[in-house]
Amino acid sequence: MSVFPVIVIFGLSFPPIFFELIVSLILFWLVRRILMPSGIYDLVWHPALFNTAMFCCLFYLVSRLFV
Image (cartoon, rainbow, N blue to C red; front, top):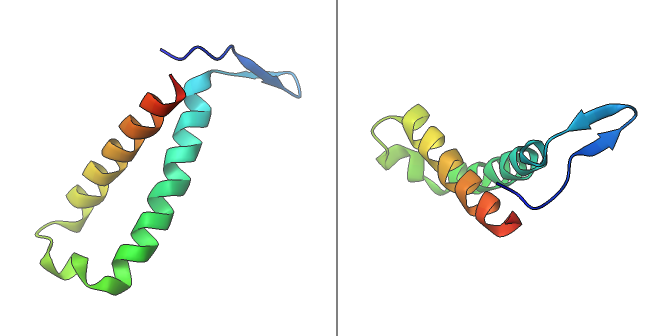
């Protein structure tokens, strides 16, 4: 649960978790873009599961930083 209030933009109200998801998605894209050329994905058994786990970890870290 975040301490930030609901944010209203152009009459649409967004819960604080929406912005946490956006920040974690941007971080996920950056980390993935760094890891792709490094060859880490050659060592991963299932890239889709690795991506999902990485996004979950990044979302957890971002949500802990926002609290």
